[in-house]
Image 1 (cartoon, rainbow, N blue to C red):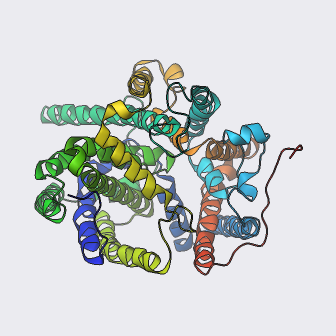
Image 2: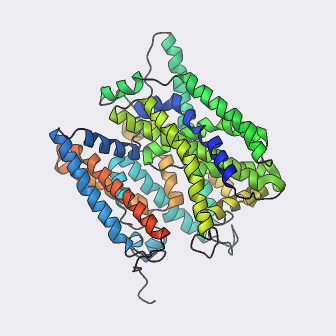
Length: 520
């Protein structure tokens, strides 16, 4: 058996249809828990809802103010994206790499990158989310990574490339995953326990508060909750859909990829609901979808189980199964949040998502092959390096070699951070409210471990702006914050489309703005 499979349009399209549609059904039974009982924000879903509601309520004076505010900050954000583009001719150029706190801090990713998207997200998310991000950034990039870098040559080889999973990058990936798992699994089993107790007590005509930290399960707008729960999606649809696509996957995947065994696929689909819940819960708090990290875990485990002969391909296939499922299910929860706030039919949202998923399974391979045939994709020295392709393949190779190939003490550190995540959640739930409300969110803390500290600073700035606005003019802030934040997010997001087209046309920005020490 080879450690690669030749890319072909046919099997790529079939593979996407097999692995993506399962994600549509996995979290349907928990949609009420995530959106109504836990009141998760899902910032992108909320931003979309604010935009839709604003256009549908133009007759209302307050709605007109919101629409005007949205359009104003949308324009500012879009034009700011255009302006920034002119200074990004090369890598590490432009305002997004402005050394706000000095070059030494910039090297550790502590700088403000002028991203209106993250500032807007910080305005929508709670202050605790932004502070948790900053706390995670300080622990990782402020303390751990500089200290571990000094151990290069002792704990891990000094001559490894930066993206190697056997070096510092291995600590970053697996410690962040340990935090995510600890927080996600704690909340998953907590919710499952509460549901079981609730069902048992309902049989005795009793009621149960779904969350000790939420004293009133009703949303501030009962009409939204009523519409969201009135048109329920039958459990048999979720169960049947999940079972059917799981069976198809168990049969089809080993046929398409002989390297992966049928029982590996069964184990993946048994673990999938808990992983999908972890991912949706984290995205509801931070608006950051960590499906790719769950895919990395599946890749590492399956590559190790399959052995040296089949491990690389089996790991990559398993990664796609888990990642696609977590990604699609999280996107559906984002859409459900939009539907909840816009009084839309959950069934209509599910049907729309199904149609969109089918279109994506066809368009995505075609788009990929457009690049693959037109450009030298994957060449480390070319324009389209595809760095994540190299990272994922190296992870599979590392998984084949087993845990012994991890950097020194990485497994122990992961166990420690997993325990920390569970302990922090226990303290939040068991401590008095005045203490528990200050406990950081481990799921949120994990994100800057991988990504860097810069976006935590952006989001903290957004939270600070909201705090000051509420102090100066509470009524106006309550009305305008969602609209302003949505405008900041959508403006920069829309600019990414023409920016991508310019890159495809090989139109380069004319200027590279960068910063160097005075002695260089």
